[in-house]
Image 1 (cartoon, one colour):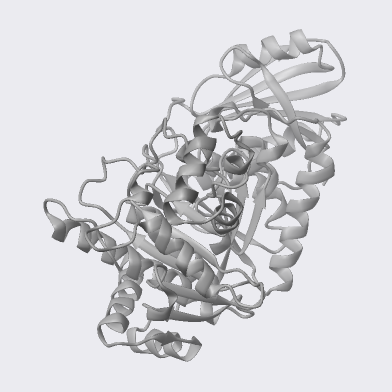
Image 2: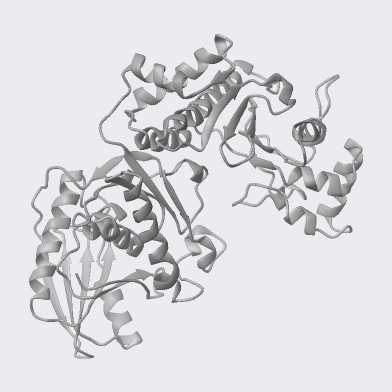
Length: 492
């Protein structure tokens, strides 16, 4: 692995080493899946050229070649010039990536290469602006740039500097992923946890560290090939086996995940939502997507998880509250699943799973009724993080919903910390379920459900959803913009 020089070089080396070893463990742990896609992991493969840190061999896909380049000054941006600058006597990174690409292309089968760096892409760089946030590739955006544009001129310069045609350059870049701003080990640790959970291993931070340290020892001892037996031996030696495996179902509805391939099932719905930024993605491009695409895809994922032998499921990703409720209902208690939803701290990092099984602390809810007489259906408002009453009343009236009554159920002191512990969340879900079942006995033809709270509470509510009339779930569109109809729960 190569590193760039600067002050406190040991800091970059240690950070880069930890990242590489954790990345190695992330892929090595996948070797013991029931039906693994990863078949072998090679460490520091010297014949691979510039992408020799880690080679992941996969069953039905080309090998994945990784190169880690960390700098002591992560504030320095990743620019197009960086790809053209080499240390004294060395070829620039772009030329070395091209050489690796040519060397590793066999019988027309192209390699897949990944650059990991803790540099941030330069905002106004003509080439780095073409980096796609989903595919992590410069192509096809760079290929579409006109020759007279800044990106087109930079593209021509790149090709000229390494002595290839622009067509040859673009072919190589189509095989290169650029994973920039990869300085956080926390994110990588969380994805290691997904894999370790799925194969039945302990997934504590201590267990993840043991895997990372094992990968470091493999490198130090000159181990070049890691296979399933290598990992199994480590697991037995370190006593890493856990109880029943947990499947991670990743739902990407607001933002893409960095490592979707590490989830047991990964769903990508971003193209179905309006908006370029995560905070903008609240409304679908077509209202029928909820019933015709999203719901079937989630149910099919549940079927595959069940066929694979999992009964314990974690729902993770970026999605809004209606999706959390619906996902909880798909992986419901009556369907035989146990559910877990990750809790998040203020900075978005994982703070631990809130599972459906466990103690429940009784919750007292205050009920407030509002008569509307616009129809024969019942609206339910659930206040946890704040009070949605006025917003829901306004939406019902302006949208002309056929609502006869709005019933609002509130925790004692709504706020961000209203449900502070897992037992509070489970207790709230049980209390709400009991009250909704009681309301349903009045024979309402349909419910409309609005929630102001955390997705952990939403998912556990859906997990307990049973003996209810048809229910329309609603997501808010942002302050003052009302609500949008999302998933519809059938009568149960």
